[in-house]
Length: 418
Image (cartoon, rainbow, N blue to C red; front, top):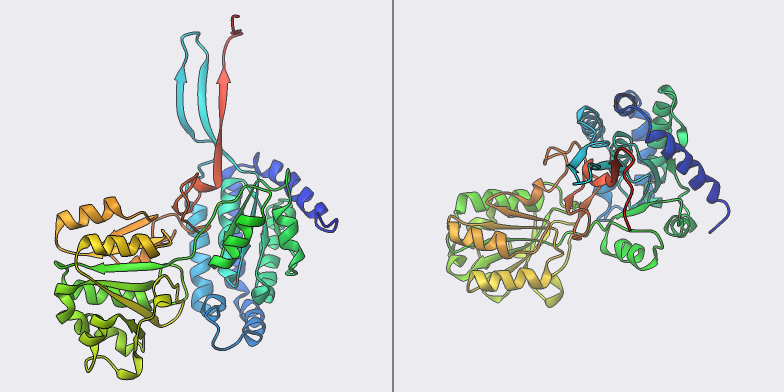
């Protein structure tokens, strides 16, 4: 490991030991104080963010993720306050029982200790991970993307001020330098960092998975489908497809591919009509292309190529695939899904049940927009990310997902016989 980073990780470990013993009320006050500081210094945050935006290409798909506004800062602060008000899972007894010899066993939630996070151009994540780690008694070491350097540094300064204000060690939250060497140091911090969570595109997640020497919880890229079934309601479908695609195109729960039953191709133009107003470029297979020709703006309609399926667009772009049956829809989704969020639009209860049972994804929706795959929308206050793996955590990761557990065994002098 680069010797420059070792003192930072050691300080984070010492801070984690103290946080694990800190009263939950104090931890909640730290988060509330930080939220207040973000609101109070929003002008400073916007100025720092403007420096980052000025250095980013105007057509970059990451630009929307990087952007801060007064409204977004207020929303970030509100999410932090929501986390502060939640009950901490730390110390919760998950199970308890007594053995025949009289000893009692309790399974108790405890913090991980030191949580490492690597993210791309998403300054809101800096505040989210701070809030969730503080509330669960974890120290956090963050490696932010260089694209968000000034924004992250401005936010981190306010977070450290909040820690000082409550008398807590500033090393409870560490923002690593933006240089690439910091990534390798974090991934190799065996014995000092307990878990690393990458949050970003497929390339970042793959790099972390392949190079980490510490445990990793993957948060996956979102390649999201919505299947409009033979028995789908057109009005519901129009609203869901438009919202899932256009609410925020740069987020991981945004719709990438509309799968439509061949029997409903006659409704495809009406289904896509709201997308035209938002200037969504469509990559349609042959049948869908034919159904949209003359009924969708020609300047926005393209023939789909193989690479358009299985693509996370992060832009005002969407693919359309035509299928003969629910079986075909399930097969298409199984082939291209990133196991993040998938939806069916149908009035057929049997089709809905089969879809929810068969689709292998962290979040499966019936007649609901995939835009709801979000920790705050699930009532978690905020999220660390959307886990697409199956070990430890899956879906939006809130407070419980930043804990592990240990067994506490009590007795009256019991000894084990030979």
